[in-house]
Amino acid sequence: MANVLVVEDDLRIRTAVARALGDRGHAVGSAPTGMAGLAQAVEQPPDLVLLDLGLPDVDGLEVLRMLRAVSQVPVIVVTARDDDVSAVRALDAGADDYVAKPFSAEQLDARIRAVLRRSGTGRAAVEPIVVGGLVIDIPARTTALDGQELSLAPKEFDLLAYLAGRVGTVVTKRELLTEVWHLPYGGADKTVDVHLSWLRRKLGESADRPRFLHTVRGVGVKLVGPPSSSDPSPSEAGTGAPD
Ligand code: CA
Image 1 (cartoon, rainbow, N blue to C red):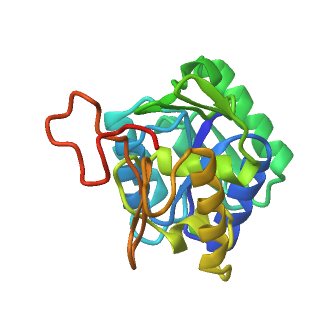
Image 2 (cartoon, rainbow, N blue to C red):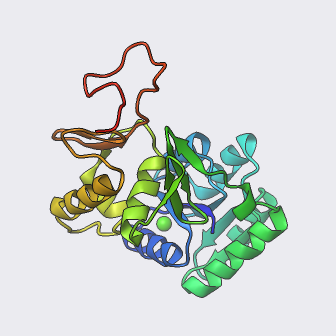
Image 3 (cartoon, rainbow, N blue to C red):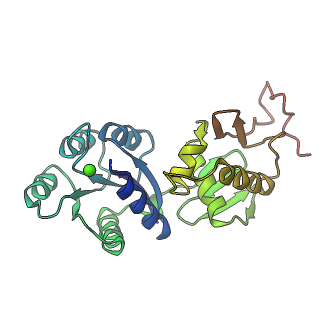
């Protein structure tokens, strides 16, 4: 029920944590390095950051200090087993809580809920994302188009929510397979294509006549709002009138 950013270099752990939190209703973003995590935390502020202390580029404690210089976002650090010293240092540096590896999904989710409760963020703090006539409420997992609620399958919603978190940015199919399907090692582009076409149908558009989902051939797909009727330069796709 929160937007969680997972900063973890171990692909296996990152994927497992993302899947476990996703299954519990959280919207999960992830970054494999400290610097990527920092950039993402600033560009798309999450409700909570899960920060591994053992990162390849910058020490997790240093990432935490840099993050604290610009943000009060709740942070739970992940420490190696029995590393009490790091845990204490992290708490001193502004972490809200810590979990020691290995941890269970239930334990992590409980810590996240407790930290969000204490910090007063979470569900109520997350505003729906509005793109043109499309309103995506990630915590409530609902989507409305032109005031009408859409009935989306879970993966269709996950896909749309992921793109909505990056409006205007081209997202590759590989990234979607990793972040939405949690399939870092495999998965066919066709999986993405099929879900995109289902999603397009529900959004009342097609690949040839896109309204929100624009394919960039050979690169990926991006979510953009349609030009408004007052826009002086409507795109070649049309004037925005439904057809
Ligand atoms: Ca690590």
